[in-house]
Image (cartoon, rainbow, N blue to C red; front, side, top):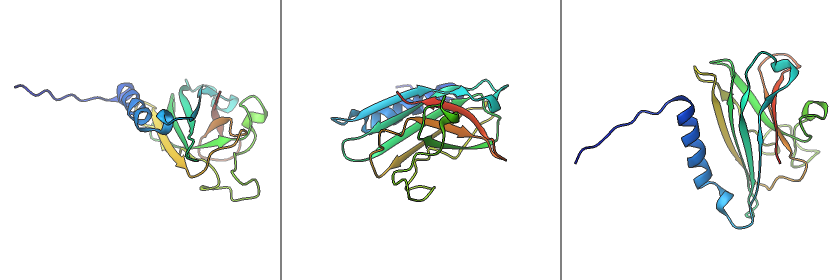
Amino acid sequence: MRLHRFVITGTAALALAAVATTATSPAGAHGATVTRGEFHSFAIGTGLDIGGHAQMVRADDGHTQVTIEVSGLEPGVTYAAHVHAAPCAVGEADGHYKHDPAGAVTPPNEIWPGPVTANAAGLASGRTVADFQAGPTAVSVVVHRPGPVPNKIACADLA
């Protein structure tokens, strides 16, 4: 019997990671709500060839899982990524989604599938699970570059 060893890099690795994450995610759970969107650049991200997607799974067990895969980023740079409370076209997705509107501006009250660091090819992926089911105003994921405001470079509407 001959064994074969395969090395998978770049986009293929991200694609396989997405399949593995989806296969083990609550998406297969009865009654889960899955929303997805494609990333596009905001004005501040002009010049970057942004691509990729985001997915949110609101499971009937009361958890929310968010995964992102983003391409076209600057290699080696670490980016923040948060679920936002408005669509991408409304005030550049407005502010972060908060489970408790009067609560903290960090997890566990917010949903952050980042920070993520872009590899040498400009690809980054992130995943998080919140211990609550996100409400209806959790409608987009925004990627922020480090540095001063404005820093929103990309957004994906979750539909």
